[in-house]
Length: 77
Image 1 (tube, rainbow, N blue to C red):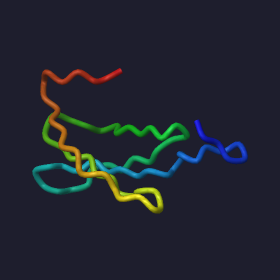
Image 2 (cartoon, one colour):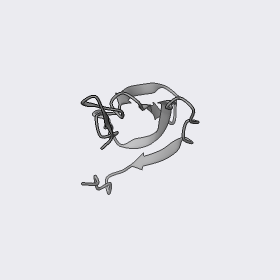
Image 3 (cartoon, rainbow, N blue to C red):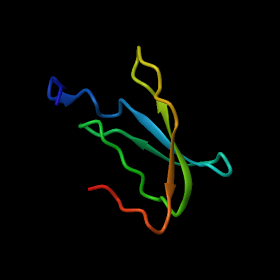
Image 4 (cartoon, one colour):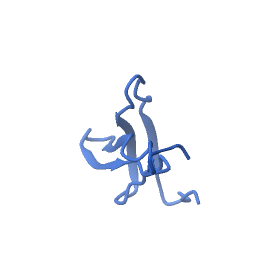
């Protein structure tokens, strides 16, 4: 992990939103932690889009990532 003066450079660097693919409504916003990880807490069955809302300075935001959650979905560990 990269650290500057005891603080991670990743914390709060990335901001993502969970978008309902059917309506285009932003349902939840997640901000990266010290390791650059993030999680959404309220994801039900359906079609979603993960969208990078804020990219680090000097970088372009990543492309939207479509996500389908169905009865057969297995959460990665």
